[in-house]
Image (cartoon, rainbow, N blue to C red):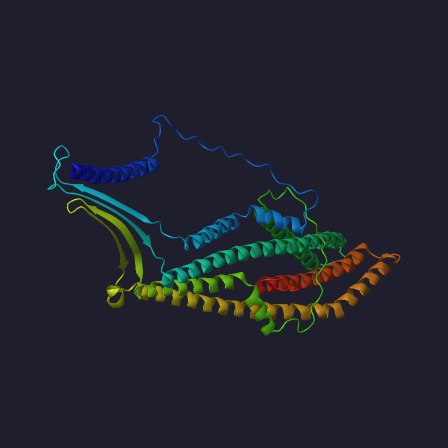
Length: 455
């Protein structure tokens, strides 16, 4: 009787184990497949159109930069990509869940249990061992990917800032150029009317009329081209701000940047600044480091490592014995040592990332050479204008005032003198714009304003 109770007790323990495992499996299946009513239909999300944005008063550069950064789709996408990279870096340190194993085997029938019937129950727990030879380079690779994503985001933000500043400067230049170009057309029209009047009186020749007419057509064409450039720049700025081109006014007539001393910046200093500040270069370096770490991870798979530790409890009714047991599993990288090529593929990707980094540095060096040469040339030209054109403009203004106060002066003579002054003012305006554009290009190439130090 005591033997029968012992056997029934062991059968009950094995049955309880089998029931518990079955319950866990059933619970997991139910949790993974929730019931959905057949009549269920997802409600589409209603997207409300935001109110149109408009600045309070004339638009400044800082307002435009903030607005452009807020509505730029590429920046929003890069922010999402950076968040994905951050989560992947955290996921690289995840630990595998332990594995629970249980089984029960019965021979015979429960109605007539005898010592010849056997019932075996087995319970085991397996715990995976993190491999530091794989985990450390994997975490390093994901960290480098995250830093590269952040660098891409910062590079896009800098590009938007540069675009807004350049468009503001261009619109300021074109606004002043439109005024001068309109004055050219007006003054040349007065001269053309005077020449036509003299031709009708026989005081001027047809060649003089043709010259004045051709010049009038040229001035009108220049005005049309300048207006087209103004409209194009305004549309580009409106596209960055995601507004209609006619929905904002600009704060123009900004202060012209002062001339930099000569030499303003040596190539070695500019290269050092770009090396520290250019986020696109930083992204290339981080991606090269990520590829190198990924190669180390694949290469380290050739290092044998204990993959899992198992421990459990076994109960065998046949011999009325129970025992605890423990074991380990270990990878044997025979094929990794001999015929597998995953490490070679990872090495090739790392080499490609290194080549991309080298090419990026070479391209930045060429851009720096071009930007520095352009800035030096336009600075020298602006310096010459300050020494020669500025005094000339002052003299022409005095001469024009004297002509206006001269009695019996012909109107077309005053118009011709004023036209020469306008032409000189346009030349000075264009020279200063070329210098300002070269300065903006240099700052964009450096990756940081000249009056700031990069992080």
